[in-house]
Image (cartoon, rainbow, N blue to C red; front, top):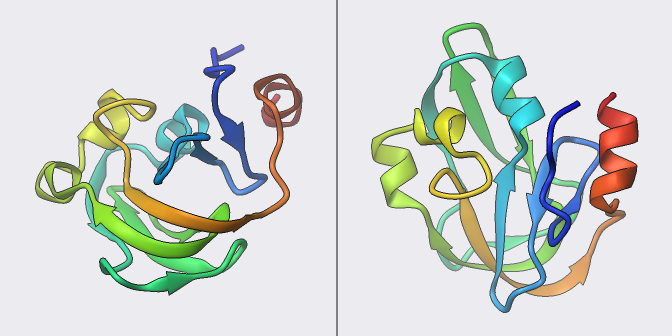
Length: 122
């Protein structure tokens, strides 16, 4: 079973979010592995108002295009331009350098602990 950082919270759609302010959002290693080699990221724009559970972008891999969901509601304050320029960071370091965007959070969606996510991700 994969190792999921206990300091993060997880969505059923395989996104993670930390408790910092602003909160950092990314996709889990489960999502990165399922996608295969990530080749393109479409992320929300800085200043965009996003809703928990809503589609906020796309992740394109050599195998498929997947929708990116936000685990939180709020305003996007930063996007990871390094990951946009080098989408392979999502595969090589999904919980670190492969983060996707940061949000000034107003509300959080339905999120799981690392243990709950590991059980669901299976």
